[in-house]
Length: 144
Image (tube, rainbow, N blue to C red; front, side):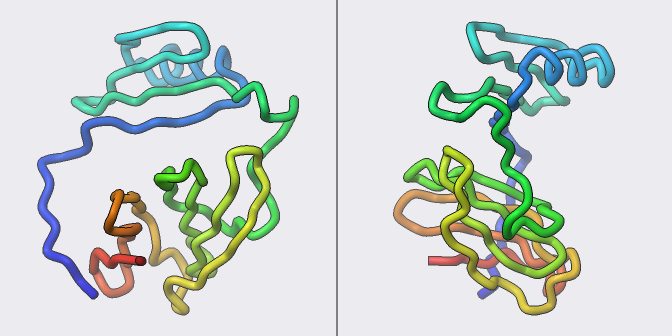
């Protein structure tokens, strides 16, 4: 199902890092983005007109925990579901991978059998579902 979706841009993005100090150095010193807010376990920088928030790890996340491997296969897009799960679109196999905040992958759903880099954008909309971009068909699709 394609949707004629128009937007003037992205207002903000949230990321999580296992090493907040290294992430801050990368985004501010290496890439040169300006920090606009900094509080404990969070900093926000501007990338053009988009605010990007970067948080450190949650206390419940084991030290050294990473969110790689398992069903992840060239992840190209991610979003947070309403329930806090992390939804990742795989580029190589067309799957959507559901990962709990503690890093445990709990579900894999085939969104596009073509795979090979066709899935990339994801956003969860409460009461509607998950929208994803399918570059193979040049559509914005809805997963309920």
